Image 1 (cartoon, helix red, strand yellow):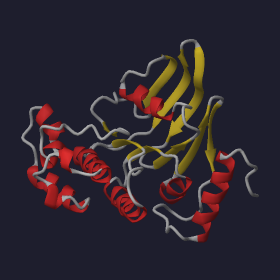
Image 2 (cartoon, rainbow, N blue to C red; image 1 turned 180 degrees about the vertical axis):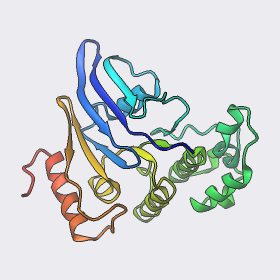
Image 3 (cartoon, helix red, strand yellow; image 1 turned 90 degrees about the vertical axis):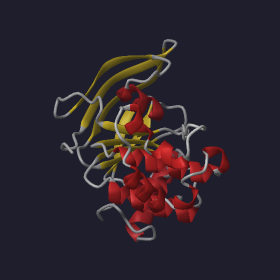
Length: 243
């Protein structure tokens, strides 16, 4: 695998003439950046913009990898919707990227990932038989299967119960170690635990929030993690942050 580059995005995005966001976003190489902000501010649009997907608006600006190489083919993407194909089995959905590229699917790797996300007993089932949380775990396995130097994760743990969410956070942190990860989340606790960089987005721009001094992945109940979570929540609610 090639080294994981950073990404720099600068510019303004408008929908029907109205400014959605105007940002200078620096995503460091080989680190986890957690992107937070109020609903509708354009967090998911950032991901879609860099991926070259439809955003429903017009972007004026630039974005590029810090190594200046094209981003095409170097990003794995987990959308808010699981996007599982209903006519394929769960196992086939995990390895669908290889099939679409005309490659022989690595079934052994796909099976190991399903075991890691707790779905090995459901490998031959169709997605319609799974709960929402199980479908989200299958989508996570599919994203991890791609093994790309950059990963975009759009609220990847939102449908999971607290215990499973913590487990999947740890799995993603393990398997995406050294990758450039941009994770969109509404959860300050998640950002405080996972992030090397926390970026809070608004219509006026994006600003970095101080992360705990301890390295990610952090213990959930570690005092500095909890303090970061509380201060970030207060800020997102429009309250004055603690000193």
